Each structure stands twice: as structure tokens, then as C-alpha cells.
Image (tube, rainbow, N blue to C red; front, side, top):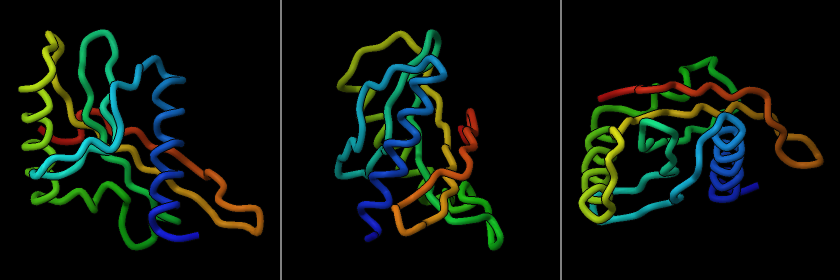
Length: 121
């Protein structure tokens, strides 16, 4: 399975997870000249800008370790642009959703999801 399909699968798994945990999805794959936000969701108090990271395992590093300072700056800039275009009284928050999977002859299978709430400011 190619990287783009894997990424879409992971983002879909993250959206399903968020819905099961009481979030509503406001948008996905929001792109600007500043960058992209994988999922924009909300709950009672927050508008959540979620970065989804997909990995087979955490042997080398946790999936969230790949959200470095440069990526965080791009996410903040993209979220600021979204907030300038979409009125909300909710507090913004940045989450990272780690998706761990395994591949089989039948496709990809979910092994684990870690939702890191307020992963960075």
C-alpha cells in the first residue's frame, strides 16, 4: 500500500476514534500556504487541531516525536489562518494522534491509538 493511502487510512482511524470519544469533526486535510492540518475537531470546550502520525512501531521513536518544532510552527500558522476565517468561542488546542498498525495480506490493521491531548502550545 502506498504512503498516501496509508496516511488516509490513518487519518480515517483517528477521525473514528475522535467521534467515539465525543468529538465532532469540523474538517480534514485543511491546506493553506502555511501547511496542512490533518483533522479539525471540536468538543464542548475546545477546537482541536490534530496532527495524525502513522507508524508500524515505536522501536526507533514514538510517532509524536516526528512533530518537531518546524512542524509545530506550520501547524500554529495554519490554525491561526483557519481561526481568522472561522468564528468560534472555543479555546484552540493542538493534539497529536499516534496510530500504530501492522500490515497483512488483507490490508492494514490497527494495533494501537495514542491521543496526546494538548501535545504542544
